[in-house]
Length: 270
Image 1 (cartoon, rainbow, N blue to C red):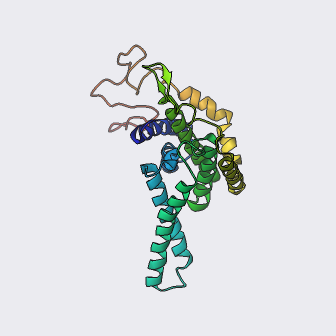
Image 2: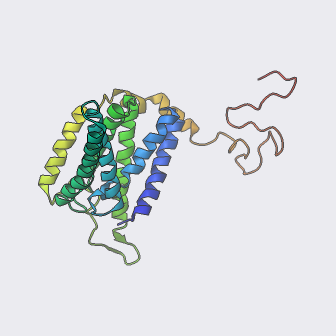
Image 3: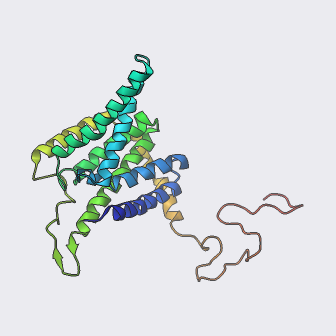
């Protein structure tokens, strides 16, 4: 399988490519795009949470422990003394961080249900819920984050399958076929639990109407097609034959894209 560094690198490239398209389509505000892109990068390492003592697993349960322990703290903030709240917060963190991880790995195995498209769907729904209900983002942004995470998740599965092919020796490794799968056929019980959890999370997701209307807009796709390549100049300087295009030369006032050069003294703004 691919290592952690490879998954992070490829996941970042894929998420960055999606972010570029999203920015060009003017779908969401740039400040939301950063969080959405990070969701895609997170998805690219999430399948390895079933690998005991792996960095993704430790990071996930550490983050989960911090988040849930603060939820407990805020719930009892006005009921107990500061010392008692410290104990509750620390105890909750240890319980969720280490107890939750131990229980999770007791009932999971590597390349099991978490290496499946079904698990990617579950985490996509969870991301949409977190972005809407916890982070307070718009429904369309929430679903876009879920979509980014799902794409990152599937990217991880595809990479694992590619690394299961020994190209030089022209053979398939024993791990081939265990990563990119719809569900875990070896453990139908795990599959049933994750399918039920995904169905329950779907009932809690925000409305998908803004997201569907946004990505299915004809105007958006036409605009993306028009912006795919420059019409005649690359970066406003280089023409189609690789020479400096007619217009501003090096050292002159340069205007690129739709931003006009600042008017000189005595000139009227264009």
